[in-house]
Image (tube, rainbow, N blue to C red):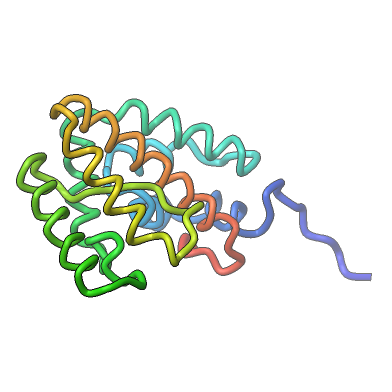
Length: 173
């Protein structure tokens, strides 16, 4: 009978993440949130006993992002293949034109790309949801919007991190 390998709570994705080199873990984390300080902080505190403990640490680290950490993460979001949220969603040409104009207005007002957590949004509602969110947040003052963007980025990062460690073929190998 073959010997069983010890199982890390959270499955093989968490085990691979915990066992990855510091550099590989940091690079995998940067795909979740573009703040180097956030990624290094989480990578240095490994191993995590459970996915829940990793997510709690990531959430706490997100709340500790400085102004420059947040700016770095938002700049990284602008480099994503689909940086203009909602542009690939189904909808009319007029809606896509309105969305593109709203993204431009948002970036002109706040100096960074628009971020919003959309995991719970059905694909057919994405364009309308993004457009409505941008329009609503354009009325925020810069400090309020920075706080809102940080919260949305935290939610996005946690979702990406959860997907990362849930994967059997984790990028952090």
